[in-house]
Each structure stands twice: as C-alpha cells, then as structure tokens.
Image (tube, rainbow, N blue to C red; front, top):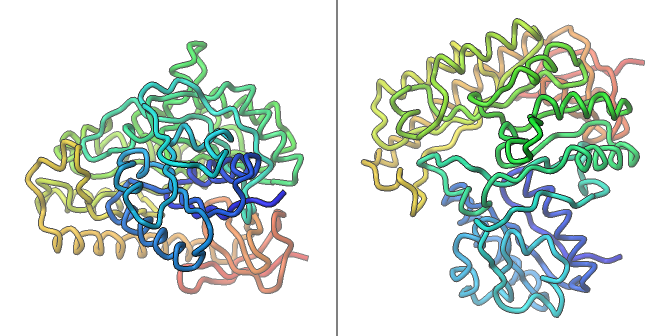
Length: 414
C-alpha cells in the first residue's frame, strides 16, 4: 500500500505517531501528499517546521501539504494561513483515518484538553529504525512555567498494560531487539488508571511477559516521580538498559522553583548516586535549559557544577526560548547572547563528560544494537563504529579500541 511522505520534527512520541499518521492517511486514500508532523517545544522547532513546509511546496508542487502535530494544535490559524498548506489537523485527529478522507480539507483541530483516550494503535515498526518506540502514555498534568506542551498534548492518559505488552510482542515478532518506552511524561504512567500501576510495575510486567525482548530502554524520566518498583527493576533486570535520561532543566534550586519543577538539585544527585549503587554500569543524560529568566551567573554556575556532581554524561542543552502564553515568558528575560553563551558552555562541558565516558570504555567488550551496517549503540547509548559491516537490527559484541569525534571505535567479535 502506497503512503504519503511524513516529515517528523521533535520527540520520540512524534516518531511513533508519524508511523500511525502514515498508515491512517494511506488507509483513507491520501497517498499523494506530504504531511508535516510539527514540534512546538521551542520557537526554533516551529521555524524549522515552517521552513520544511515551504521547501515541500517547492519540491512537490502538485502534492497536498497537510500540517499536524503540536505546533498545529496550538496555533492552527497560523498554519492554515500559509499559502503552501492545504489542511491542518490536530494531535487527536491526526491518529484517525477519517481525518484524511477527501484529501484532508480545511482545519480539523479539536479541544485537546478534553482528550481522555490512551494510545491503542498497534504498529509494525518504525520505518528506517533499528529500535522501536512504544507509546505508554500521552499528555501531561504538570505546569512547568516554561512549557507549552501540556496545551498541545492534553492531560495525562496512560495506555493499558495489556495493550503495551501486545504492541511489544508484535514488534519483537517483527524482529525488533530493542524497544524504548516513550510518552510525554512516562514517570506519570498509570496514575490515571486507578489500579496502582506505575512505570516500575509496567517495566516488570514487560520483562516477565515478553522474555524474547533482549533490550528495554526508557525515554526521559522526571527525577521527582521515580518509584520503588522502578528502582528494583534497575537493580535486578539487566535487560533494562543502564542509560537513564533525566528531565533536570537546571541546577539552581531557585531556578527550579521558578520553573515549577518538583525536584531539587540534591534530589537529582541523590537519585544518580542511588542508581549507581544499584547498577554500577549506569550512565545518565539530562535535559538542561541555559538562560532561564532571572538566571544569574551564580545560578548558572550551579547548573554547571551539577553536571560534575551528578556525573551526567549525555547532555541535551537548550538555550531558553520564550513561549507565548507561558508564565516564564512574562518573567525578566536573560539577554539572548548570554543564553547562547551559557548553552555553548554547557555543551562544551557535556563534550568533556562524554569524552571521559568513552575513554573509560577503551578495551571493554560492548553489546551493541546495530543501527547501520557500520555501527550502532552500546547499552549505555554511546555510538560505536565497527571495523567491518554488520547486519542492522541485530545485537553483536564489539571490543572497544578507542574513540574519535565522540564515537567509540570497535572491533566486532568473531
């Protein structure tokens, strides 16, 4: 079955949903189209989406162009007004085939805050990906002062454990060796179900009921919501990958308070120490925002020192971006050049931390998920290049001989 081209921006959840969008549009007969699945986490993400829409019109002058995703949900009028755009579809509507019938005319964007359904879509895989992403929840009930995403995604809605497990079984049956649990706020999983099912209990069920799955990985975690079941799984289940990406955002308690985050600096450090005691091979990544409103040099210094104190390895750094309609946009702003300079400083610090990790892997034997013939990712999510080709999708052993430009170099076993 032919399908439209889907251009995806943003998070792993969007990657999952783009597969659903591609299939639903094809089912509805909308195949000669370009669908742009947008992100709204920063102003830059929206700028890139608008640029992609204009480029798509130049490259495909006869195809219909449909815009969906978070940016379209938040400001459908802006995208509908673009001369290149033929249709705008909201985040709920994009997952239904009927939204694409008749060429997806006009604007179809409903009230996302009224959404109550969880994900129930089963997919066969992710096009062009060696690992598969499984959506376990949608939406967010929290209100960080910098974030607009709850208004684009709606309230927290968890997918029933049985449906999650059915999806993972389907994916492993199709040859996937690694699955990533994803959503908007996965550590809030289960709170709306009412049967005391949390993320840790779900992880335990998946590993028990899908023994054929070699590797389970988690997407971004909120340090304030880690439950004892998840800590137990981290300690006892080596099929749960020892790489944990944390939604940290800042290292200053005052800035965290102004962000309306629910964790403290000390809690981040304590969590990392506790996990390392349970799982010595664990590594940590973190999202960090540079130049949040009112951030002083001293407050920024606390974020820099947190990177070393918590021994964070993989940093995902954003210069603060104002989002109209959020409380942070009304706070005293840090000048943009300072935001950019602080983001650059954090990235340099991240490069140093990552280099230390790569150097420490020299001489070790790694288990690698092959993503391309020439390389893949280790259990700690480091990139590695092979001395010869391997078959994508498989898990192989490689001995690390060094690293170059942020990538491990390895010799395949056998």
